[in-house]
Amino acid sequence: MNTANSPYVKRDLAHVWHPCTQMKDHEQVPLIPIRSGKGVWLEDFDGRRYMDCVSSWWVNLFGHSNARINAAVRDQLEKLEHVILAGFTHEPVIELSERLVEVLPAGLTRCFYADNGSSAVEVAVKMSFHYWRNVGKPAKRRFITLSNSYHGETLGALAVGNVQLYKEIYQPLLMDVITVPSPDCFEREPGESWADHSRRMFAHMEETLARHAGEAAAVIIEPLVQCAAGMRMYDPVYLQMLRNACDRHGVHLIADEIAVGFGRTGTLFACEQAGIRPDFVCLSKGLTSGYLPLSAVVTTEDVYTAFYDEYVKLNAFLHSHSFTGNPLCCAAAVETLKIFSDDNVLERNRALAEHMGSLARQLEDHPHVAEVRQRGMILAIEMVKDKASRAPYPWQERRGMRVYRHALERGLLLRPIGSVIYFMPPYVITPEEIELMVTVAREGVELATCD
Image (tube, rainbow, N blue to C red; front, side):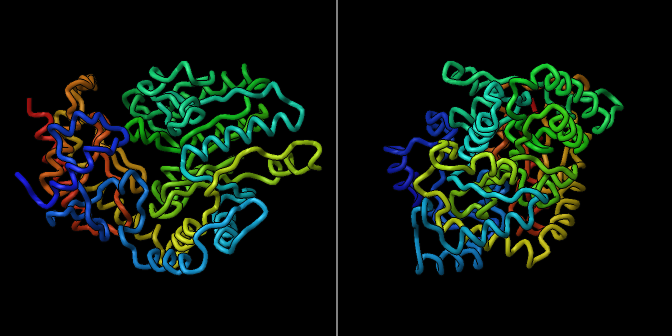
């Protein structure tokens, strides 16, 4: 049936190759061209609306077409769209850096900019390696990561992650890293608390750091939530123990807050819940409230000083992007931080998160739901074949795809990870919209597990 969407779908499928997609799926699953967005809602060319329950891949914080951010970008566009950041600077990048240093854990004082989350991870990895070279410890060149971790899809970022599908395919191109079992609390023993499980699992990290301290540059970790692994979560005590162990063994700690930063876990940054300061923090996604691609790596004076030297020493950090610190991106990011400070966002989110959790936890008794877990504004519902044993559905059955298609029919954008349904909505969502979101997810669970 031809609709107003049809010409756009035809034109798209003739030339566009979509990310993280088996394009053949679009023979059966509709491609949806979006004409506009407002708040939590997207609208296609037929006038159908879809609630953006996943913040368009976890980036949107304050709704589509946010009036304040629109105005900030528009105002900057009339002044300066871009300038090289080597040898030049501009007000938005200065103000953004000042504001980031103000809100991040004390001691993180130097901001290096890139274009996206994967690039931020590349920067942090290279910067840690280069630091140890500059201070006379070139043997420290390996990285320690967690199982089921995800840090991006450029080659360096992919190497320090552990999503098996990606790593198996591209393994010949990747550097060798050291992988430690995740503290994922879904795997805890019956009756074991999140904190006790996280402490027990830290023994693997302690042993690895003791064995490899002489060759390890850094541990890289997603604080509190391993998002791409299916929103798997762990207790802040793990981060406290990790910070102490990295200090004892002389290894950097890289916190990848790209997905979990800017209020997603209940605090502005997830590391705050453990009271720790990493050596590097990687930021992107919500940094511009999802408006424009920008990332930042914020580090310490100690790291910065290791690169600060006479030119002839050739100690300068070697990394650049054409659009580093783009003024339009920085203007959006500055306004995003202003909204946090002006509108009491985190307190409002606590009420929204409580409402979302109380409704979703009604699914805990479902015979094919193993767990409903939550950390702030991130909530996940894990569907399983057998509740008692927690045996998963075979991935080939694509149970999550059934939920996705049902949600589209009901006017919601849910994008399950395997058999895990999750919510990560924009912060402008209302309690009534949360109720609709949970209702449709419950319907999707029933539909996906009925055989």
